[in-house]
Length: 292
Length: 278
Image (cartoon, rainbow over all chains, first blue to last red; front, side, top):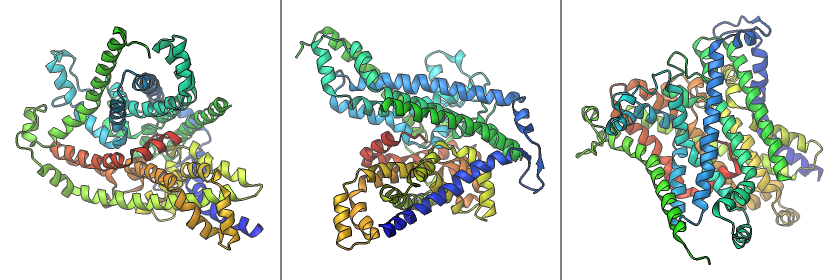
């Protein structure tokens, strides 16, 4: 028995080493780096204590980034989770045929399969002021006065990026909720029908309480995803125009790799870590409660 | 069965109309990109909404020859090594964890699963320095090693849950027959665990197919670029040649959709069990 146990521990070891070296070490190192002034060309480090953090909270771009991540989270909650739930309930209702249900589900799911870079480049073209699809439609509808350079106009840029992500991920969240709905025991609905409950009553009294766990999970995935945002913004606007679309991820990248202020970038990374880590802990706590 | 009244039909109509409108919202942009990828650049600037009368497939050939073939190959190399390593290392670890009897067991388990809570972005800067330290910056390994490390917690979580509930009688009889733990695992456990292994493989494939940030920061040489970063590079290289870029987007999109059509069940299972986006 003892010998077998040693073998099992040997099986565990490679994965453990991988995770420690490439996940834990960098994240802890990051805390340390954030206390220094450093760059990639010299090995001369100067200890600066918490001054990077003090500079970050004085930097207006940091607040723009924080605001944009929050906006992205709020819109994603409304569209992906809220509207996604609505769609999932419609798809599962008796008003949609069985074959159509599968067709709709697969089509709505499709955009989440395309890589974020490809979607971002597609929308870069769709939002193009001269030949883009959006301005073309506005012209056809006689709404030419609404036309704009969607990604270059500081008033519309961040909303254009947010809209793109809703197009890509609403179907994905909807599928997660749909799977949860289909796990609700059918006899609950039958009993409600005998009592004469309407479709809306059934949705509010059976379906929504029945998927509460998945609703919490998808909400938190959406919020965490909103604070990990990078590729969507980097490929479409690069944080511009005039830094109006910066998010924490692009702000960190810009500090560390474009301005070569690795210490400052590390401090931003620590802030991203704190936000995503506490949200994940919240997810675990809430999902355990829902199980019990 | 309740008699179907008018309100049933009214509901049926507006719901189906809404759902079909959303189908258009999803499909039309893709269709629009596709028709424009078949035009010459001049025609593109004249009209972006018509379907080209003589479709120009040379855009696809151009995109392929302008580097996409190399990016594809890189994605396949990086992807297959990452998948193979994640599944193998992850399966051994998950199996060991589910069978070991040790007071450290739960601590090790939480240490591994804890990796799920850590976002790759917060590791980016120090990872960059670690890769330089090991002299693997700007190599395939600079992507592969972090990819494996960041996919393992999720892979182990899925496989551990699966192995834990596995009936032990089969294994026990094999062990009594004199099989080693290794042959028991590879000959008995692995063959019955194909569904979970394919879920983990698909999840890893999607991750590598999508990953942008690590590939951008850890590579310098465009010969090593994977598809996402290669496509992004196209954006700058082809500012005057839109239609080739569009063809490139389509080429990069098709494989994962084909994979989905063949394996939609594994996809949806992987997504619902893990619920980890991007």
